Image 1 (cartoon, rainbow, N blue to C red):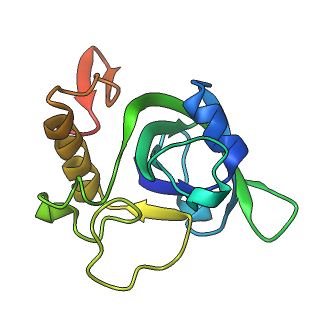
Image 2: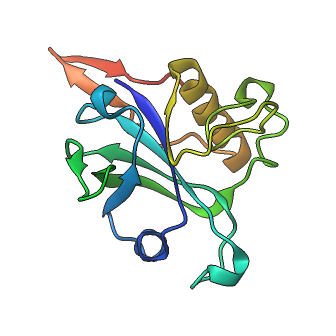
Length: 163
């Protein structure tokens, strides 16, 4: 299982997400193509300049999704992916929200940045960072997240991330 962050300012995708659509396409992605597997988890960060936003929203982590398609060429030099939205947060969680969680420093597109971060929309998130993100979300929202990170194999419940 791999974990990624997707940052988008593409207004049609953001509108679909905020309107509650559960299957979304993200395009213009360029890194980690060969590391993507079906079922991988993606943290979805919405962004954009205030003057270009078609809806009012705060930039930040807004949803968690699961990759449901293999990468496909998008007709340019990039690729696109389809995700199923598993969790949509009522409000975006910003880098400032994650400031008091030092283990999230430099978590791609999500945590506070202490180094120059590559300006890439699609970034790999290490497992320990993904676990820290989930724990921080649980603390900030004052509730555990649903058990989307569990599956049953041979009658045993296996957790992808421990809360």
